[in-house]
Length: 436
Image: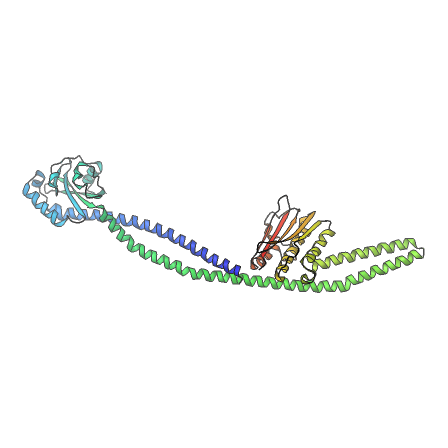
């Protein structure tokens, strides 16, 4: 694995870890919010349940009609029960109201006898026999003695005297006790959920590394097969080129010489018409030799390391010139490249120029090789009909490797192959690879 590939693998794992951590934070935040809401609802339900139990167990058994009328002894007895059983760290005030809004009892004696008309929700709670809870309005006159205590939860429920009179029983609970109960509840579940999610995230990291490693191994195997395919293709092309050069090309060259000699003899013997026919046949055979040699260059180019990259690229442009395409080659002088880099540049240029010759219908083509920052850049421009409408990266003429597959080789070398529309029309193929 190259250093560039190793960096890409590490980057993929880091991306997975960061995205997983982001999802974990979102899930934990949403879970905590949901747990907090549920815990608060449960705490409020517990406060209502406590108020109802207190009303039935600690208040209603000690209610008398005389207490409602203001009997001092009954009030003292109820006050002792309230202070002994209800008042404490969380319960700070207890009140008993008649249905017309008169306070008949409170652990704060100064409130007894105060008349405050009940709200619609308070009257409905007494009428329907329900238990309600709400944040106490400390600005109300009946709550003036609780203003220094802090935020309070007011819970009220109906109770009945032995004579059947309905009263409203109220307790005032510190709101902090409700939030503390909620916090304790959701923290217990939240910590378990958080630990579980963190463990899941940590377990996924080695799995992500393993997956990236397997994907990289698969890509390396694919690239290895691609290199073998290229080598096998080059071997077969060399064999075909050798057979054609040693066979057909030599025969055509010999035929052209024989026809030219026969034309000279016919012309010397006065057979002008026959000499012209023979000369035309010799010229035709010479054109065939040139075409065959251009075809041999296309089938199997000269050795890069023998003739150099510039000469090899010039040979690649020969078939285009034969088709009437104006071609231009610009290779930076004194450019020193590793053999593998030269081969990648040449193979890419060969594939791109084949596409120009067979598909682009271009009138001009230009090849440029320039040194880049820490690397080299190959650019092939043409003014043809541009990329196919579906996907320009899948330029795969029949019988060739295809620029899309060469992208893998470029990535393996730490570079990038881009096929894009050229400004002004046509196609631009750009390959950038590091020289190191």
